[in-house]
Image (cartoon, rainbow, N blue to C red; front, top):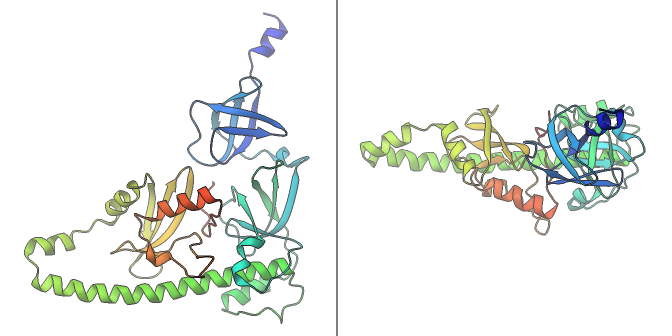
Length: 310
């Protein structure tokens, strides 16, 4: 066997970010993935089978050299969106999402108001690369957020991008608190109804009410839409559960009422752009994957709870 035969027998392998579908691109070249697709979005090794075909091999670590020669952007993370440096502050709060760019493969565990670097191929999605060093006022802004402040005028050095990130986080927190109050009122009404059922219902009804298996119920609820339950745990707020689930290769996390499985915090933006109304408590664990599907299809999915990539 000649050296040419040896080279031909060893297909090229590239480590690339994969965010769904069978199309694979890298620096102006494109391939179609044959065979199995990765289970989750992330960095994966692909075997190139010629000029236009590729095969998935295994999940891998990010390639540090992938950034070279690509368009990059820096700014502040807000969920899975980036507020670019140089952004202008617009007074309309409904324009917050429009002033950000979606970033894929954000590593879990990022600090609030973390700076980040993202890169992309021309026309491709922005890919999270690494954290960026803070500029100075981030710690004070974080303290202001934790103190439930709504104004940053007393903090020096706050850039328009950081101010937008702060407003986005405050807006999400305020609406989450309002949703909790609304759900608490609903829960009290449902508990009153349940007491009537327990008093006047038969023994079979009481046993059904008493033998609730939350994990099994959550698994069945998600399975209706083809989603998969990954984990569930008690939330810090009594009567609520944190549910981690996977749908179409992406991981999500939400908070639900443990009895009704109504959504408390969807982990994604559910605001109507026309009315400004938040829709979290209008949905249940059964219907949430359908909402995600529609948002992904329309390109408007905004994720607030990072659980996508490890």
